[in-house]
Amino acid sequence: MKTNSIGASPGALWRYLAFDDKNLEVVTVSDIDVKFNNMIINNNRLKIFLEKFQTFGRLLSYYKDDFRQNKVDNIPYPLNYPVCTACSLFMRPKKLDINMKQLIINYIHYRKYRTTTVKPSEEFDDKNTYKYNTPIGSLLYGPGGDWTVYGFDEKILKHTLFPYLVQKGEVLSFVHFNKNVIEQFESSHSIVIDYNFCNEFNNEFVEL
Image: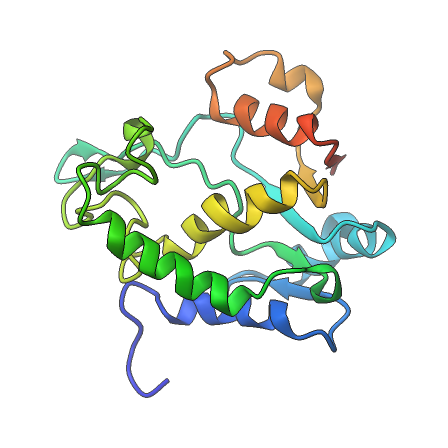
């Protein structure tokens, strides 16, 4: 890159381009400030993923609260539930039957189109996910709602790759909880929605 990223993009998106390399058996995606041992060795996450047959692996780390509480100008952030934390992902490129580069391009164009609609922060006009996508400060289209803002890399996964692979039963989720924890929350809690969606299509959870 000859210039700095804008809001961490496109730099944060380039990591995903390796998903298209069919010469690779497994791709790991992480952040530069994540310790290698925590990503690969601790909890045997890579070993477990290699022993399984799923296409995609993710760490589901935020479950005790419905969101990460942040504030901008003393105004609470929208609920931020990272379905796929981009600092801890696994992919089997040979099993992925879509082109990640084209998916990124298409979603950038789609989000640009959404900014012209009556509900620019939503994914669809007939949906109401305002508590997650409330515009705030410079985030005119909600957190990650535009490719030039922080969080767009995780938003892509949340709305495209993740639900696609879940419905194919190809997602392996690493979690720090058991089913008893899920039963403590209301049905509207993000983790319950996530868990039930994955279970509906027989995706596997591995407790660390």
